[in-house]
Image (tube, rainbow, N blue to C red):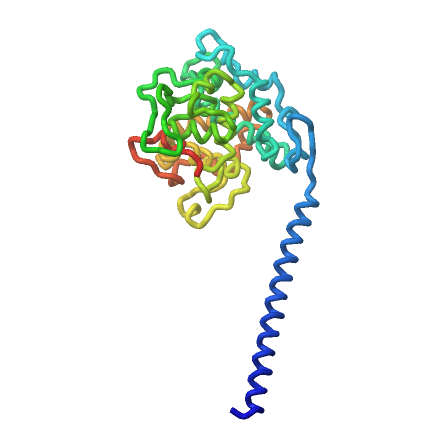
Amino acid sequence: MKRKTRNKIIVWTLALAAAAILVGGTIALVLTAGTWKAQIKKSQEKICNKGWECSGSKYCCNDTITDFFKVYQFENLFAKRNTPVAHAVGFWDYQAFIIAAALFEPQGFCTTGGKQMQMMELCAFLGHVGAKTSCGYGVATGGPTAWGLCYNHEMSPDQTYCDKTYTQWPCVEGAEYYGRGAIPVYWNYNYGAAGDGIKVDLLHHPEYLEQNATLAFMAAMWRWMTPIKKNQPSAHEAFVGTWKPTKNDTLSKRLPGFGATMNILYGESICGKGFVDAMNTIISHYQYYLDLMGVGREHSGDNRDCAEQLPFNPSSPTDDQKQQQSGS
């Protein structure tokens, strides 16, 4: 090869290498700039501290729950819980709810958005709680929606809800994993996951959820704030609208709103079956609480039901309650 030709090849090779270094450097600079921009934005994000109830979070800059939800309102929403015929007299109270909520308010629980959205989320969460712990019936004094927090555990369990095939949270000898709590927890793996979430050993001591109202509320709030599976929304995200549905979600008629919260928490046990009583009861409690809180049921939001939604996590026909599976 002639020296002139060889020199040209060397020059072109060096030029290409330099170009590659330049392009790579430009990309690196762009990425670095993007990273710094994100970090600067995060560092500039306002953080507020409001004492024991909410600190160290941007959500604490909004009203906290005690700003708009008082003792008398809790008593009004759950007016029949301490009547002699109720099954958890003296168990549930406002203080237990607020202490539990303080763990999740910095994460956005009832502190996301403006005051109306915050009150709507409170009513949505309590709508599930009220419906799942109610002993009201059609002709009950005050109506069926007045009897929320009547129970704190399943009264006549027909099994221990132990799934021995689930090795991450194996059943503990002597423990029974029947429904307990504000949004009842079933099965060993759900107790294990919820306990891990709130840092309490519920796998060995599931009875804590019917002995301590604060823990019972905490477990329910953890479930509300935690996705069932990765790449799925939590009930909180689905309700406040921070969840962006995929194309598959849209085709499955899963859209942000109260209906999606029922899908996430209960799946096909009540969703995708038309306007069944179990679904309507939960919606009725939600709207009843909206009225009592002065928000009004006309502000229930879009997509209130899950009558036509396909479930996020289909379960076997005989294991509907296993919809409340552990987050993974």
